[in-house]
Image (cartoon, rainbow, N blue to C red):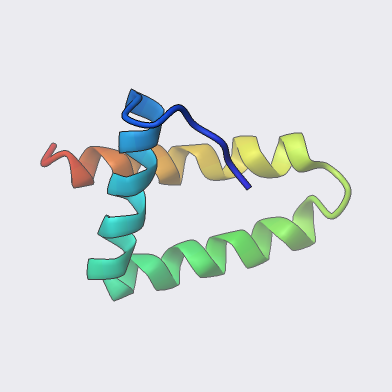
Length: 67
């Protein structure tokens, strides 16, 4: 669960990420596979899990912004 201030940049980024995954099923599948793999590698390390998926998320967010 994430909590963001309505209209903030973080809020807009989360919606862009969600919308991009919704409209790109191939990327959504890659994200799903990444998360499953990282959950196995980091079963009790949420910080490691989060850091490991960050580059993928940043790349998707850049693509969502048209970059």
